[in-house]
Length: 489
Ligand SMILES: *Cc1c(COP(=O)(O)O)cnc(C)c1O
Image (cartoon, rainbow, N blue to C red):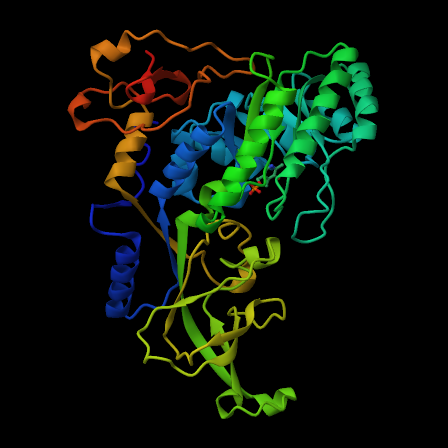
């Protein structure tokens, strides 16, 4: 694990140089090479920033990452290296977490309908935590993974959440008692309750309701003799920079609901399994216009008078919804491009639609956009492209997944090293009383994460860091320095 980022090619972005500058120079380089290949720039420092923001905003919550949201190597390795747990929905994701060095006690097998071979694989890898929401799953686990520690997945009231009206997962409150009794009969251990609020939910009060519901299930469990010790609160935290206000509103709501129903010292460990939050804003995508059709508007049956609006354009880009724009299908997103080339002031705008490279009718990225006229070879830049853009690639797109250029600022890199305990503390800090107490469910990290700054002053950089192991951090609170991370040997 030590030096896990070393195997990745990560550009260190020095002070005074931004991610925008990096994109600019990559585009210049591409045009010099005559390359039109679409590519991502991934700011791993942004992922680190999100992690720190989360630790600060939800001090009692242990983060897990859902790699189904973005399984790129840089993100997976970075989050594994930061000690984040993983919620894996299938065997390839389990294998991915394992290869990134995530210990089995920090992996949850989350798929709602697990193939038996996947349950067996989890068992063989020592992964015990698994979610379930029905009796059949319990039976499969009882037969194939008797030492599993199950988490009952609870349905949420998602009527207020946007997105596709897809299938509902999670057990209803009504069915929980029966499920808990059935688990007892089958000798399956149930250790907690989780719920998942889909991204796109804009009303944070849904968390209040879900935490209250989970509390009821804990009470039910206690009546039946269970000692449940784990609560999972989603899913569903927004990741775009513009949604930061909503993130903060949500975490405030979550903290007060937790204080009400699961107060500190109640012996319940709280986890959150996040996807979009960690990655959405970190990825920027550059894609090329590869085909263009002019469509006269009268052909579309319009009686538009403005001569500028007599035509519209259909453009094909070299990546689409079967590749990097799969979030259009998964999340109903409407990606909005930034045009890279310089334009004359006030260029005429035309109704334009953007399509992927296939001839498939679903491969529509965006429609009815007012854009200046584009030309073959023009670059379009899409920001906030980290969530569900590196997942459902299909051979239909006829292309390899777009290349990712990883980058991070030196400050962020130093924060990572500090978080990993590679930078040791001066001796007087090490004497400080530890607030570390081993928690239930396999975590040994303290719960005293409260305040920044977490950046180490350069003067305390010491040589010979011990090999990194995420499970061995201790966290201290120092009145002078805020949260202090120390490597516990
Ligand atoms: C996908 C998923 C998540 C992560 O959801 P985001 O909204 O991307 O944070 C969490 N929990 C479960 C069960 C999931 O399937």
